[in-house]
Each structure stands twice: as structure tokens, then as C-alpha cells.
Amino acid sequence: MDNIPNHLPTAELQALDAAHHLHPFTDGDALKKKGARVITSASGVYLTDSEGNKLLDAMSGLWCVNIGYGRHELADAAQYQMKQLPYYNTFFQTSHLPVISLSKKLSELSPEGFNNVFFASSGSEANDTNIRICRHYWATKGKKTKKTIISRHNSYHGSTMGGASLGGMGYMHSQGGMPIPDIIHIDQPYWYGEGGDSSPEEFGIERAQQLELKILELGEENVAAFIAEPIQGAGGVIVPPETYWPEIQRICDAYEILLIADEVICGFGRTGNLFGSETLNISPDIMTIAKGLSSGYAPIGGSLVSDEIADVINSSGEFSHGYTYSGHPVSCAVALENLRILEDEKIIETASRNTMPNLTKKWSELIHHPLVGDVNILGFMGSIALTPEKASRAKFASPEGTVGLICREHCFSNNLVMRHVGDRMVISPPLIISNEEIDILISRVTKSLDQTLFDIKKLGLYKAS
Ligand SMILES: *Cc1c(COP(=O)(O)O)cnc(C)c1O
Image 1: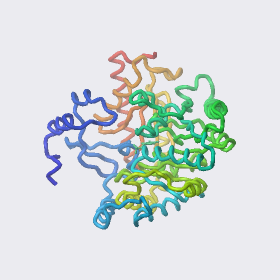
Image 2: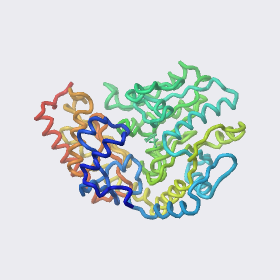
Image 3: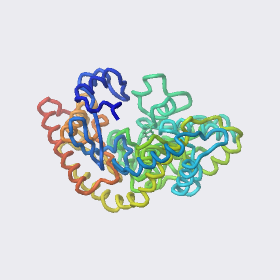
Image 4: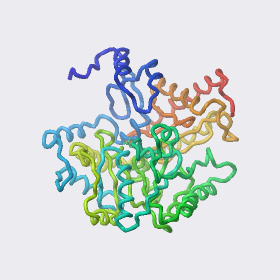
């Protein structure tokens, strides 16, 4: 295995990385000055870096390693499949064993009325597929003008042109000419940051009703779909007010539009059920899946579609869409093994009964820390908002993310991976994290918050805008 020179000293690895590797979502020059952190192995909830540090990964990689690291059963499944049939495609009336088994398994696991899946290799690709599916669905039904997809500011739906256009990240749109045509954004249900004087309940209804106003403004005959994450992840783990989803559902039922639930993070156990839509009582027409489907061990994503949509697509002649790796045999075999482990070991049930309530309780207590203005948590998706002034929910005077970044760096030094989204800190730990590991997580978070408070006082950053 000498082709991967992981025996080189860290500084040399960092130099090679800086010289030859363009990183996603990274300021390249800043990275060159500092050097990347090089991860060399992992087991359970812990990562090991090239310096031998052992970090508690409270992010499950990028929200995906639901069953934790180091499950050799998945490696064995991949190895077996690579030897048996490493690749074959699913175009032009061909299929293979792992894709047939995984399609059947997903139909069994998903809510009633979902018996078909279109495969991709990522969440972004799956959301691109969703744009194609929902526009083609309406066109096949003779409603060619129903093209516009309504999404939300600060939502995340991926990084391809379609995915990023559906997403509501302005900083992404500004690079590369997005959004593509016929995608429109309404405001997010972020009460803490945008709710002003209204109660969370009032605000939830108000933000949901923006969907209805937008449908009426555009004309129902021009709207194809509404897409949303049950709980926003990359936007900062924003759990919407309880009134939000019932009102969205009412509107989606009242108008002839499709509801796409982007389950890429919420799916496969993160909220305590297999899908976030179950936890939040949402009835979508399409569900985007990826990440936890294979626990990140192999790239795979997909679109679960309702029987009605599948029937219409099947009746439309050839659906001219697909990826070389749609239903890749190795990824399907790995996903199947991941789903088997989730089921056989009752990982979701155990988390939802035992460790999720424990983390919820301890995470919620962080509200007593002087820096914390807000706590959100549902299942194993949690966030805290940092603030210089709790009572007024104030932002810092420093540019958004300055304090969050200081906090994230302290987390790293304390051997904890916790991400910052602006000045919100977010976690999304593996579903197999134990109560002992939750205690370690909380104590490292608390220590990092204390150090952040100390630093920003010293630097004169403990000021409201
Ligand atoms: C990560 C993510 C995506 C994109 O998935 P990729 O596999 O990175 O393309 C889409 N939607 C949501 C909600 C995500 O969190």
C-alpha cells in the first residue's frame, strides 16, 4: 500500500496537499499558510490525525457516518462486490443484483406509497434529478408551464448547478451564475435570528405562509414543487417552530404542487426515526437521500418518489436522464450492509430511546453558558447560537463567523470536531455515540466555550453590533 505516502511527516503531507489539491469550500491561500489537518484513520466516534491526535467527531464526517467508523462488514461487502461485479450500468434495460436488492429494501423501509427509487452518487446529483423529475412529471401530465421550484434562503441542497440553485446560499449563487432559471426562494423559519418580536408560533405560521403568497403571486399553474430540508442542516441546524411544518403541509395539500423533502441529513436515523419526515409528520412526494444511506462509506444518493410520480415517469416514454454510476453495484452493496447493521443492531431505536434524550438534556443545559443565546436540538442534530447579549438575541459587532471560527479552533485544540456556521456551532454525532462519549463531548464543548469567551473578551470582540 505504498502508493499513499501517509508515512511522510505532517509538514510534508501538508505541503503536497497545498501544492496539488484544490479543496472544496476552502480558502486556498489561507489553507496554504496553515496546512490541512490530515486524518489517517478512524474508529467508532474517533478520528486519528497524522500527529496521532484522537478527535471526537461530533459531525459524523459531513453529517454522514451514522453507524460510526471502522465497521469492517461494510469493507467486506465492498470487497465481495468488487470481485463479483465491480461495475455494470443500469441504463438501457439492464440491472444487477445489488441495485435490485437495495431498491426493494428502500421500498420496504420508506413510508407507504414510496416504492421506487432513482439512484445517483450524491445528494447534489439526486436533487438535480428531482428538478428533472418534477418538471418532466408535470409536462407529461400536459402542464408544461409548471416549472418553477420554490425553495428557501439559507437552505442547502448541494453544490452542482442545480443543487446550489435550489439551495439558498447567496455566497454560492454569487460564484458561477446561479440560480438557474425558474427557481425562487422564500424566507427560512429561523425564529432566533429573524423572528423579531413575534412568538416562535406566530413566526412559524408567517414564514410558512410565504409559500402560499409565492404560489399565488407566481400562479399555481407555473409552480412545480416546493423543496425543503425537514430541519436545515448546513444553514446552522435550525429546528423550525412547531407551527411551521403543519402549515407548509396544509399549503402543499391545498395547491397542486409537489413537496420534495430533502432528507439527505435527516434520513437514516438522525432525528430518531428513519426519515425526518416521519419525525415532523410531513407527507412528501419525493425524498432526497444520500449521506446516511451508506454512512458515507461509499458515494450514493437517490430520489425516492411516490407511486404516482413513478407511474407518470414510466408512462412518458424514455426518461432521458441518468448517471454512469446510478445504482453503482459497490455503493449499493455497501448501503445494503449499512441498512442491515442499522436494523439488526437497532441503532436508531436505541439512540432514540437512550442516547438522544440524554444528549438533548445536556445540550439544552448549554443555554446557561454566558455565550449561548439559543439552543436547538432534535435527535442528533444540535446547534447553539453564540451571542454577546442574551436578552436581546444580539449579534456580535465583528463580521459574522469571527467568533464562531475562534470557537471552532478551540474545539479542534480540545480534540473535538464541531463545526461553525457563522456564529452558530453545530453538531451531528454518529448515532452510535455512547452516553460516556456524550459526557466527553459536552465537557469539550463547555471548555471550548469558556476559552472562546476568554479570548473574545481579551480581543475586544465581546460586543454587540
Ligand atoms: C449534503 C447535502 C446535500 C448534498 O449532498 P452531496 O452528497 O454533498 O452532494 C443535499 N442536501 C442536503 C440537505 C445536504 O445536507
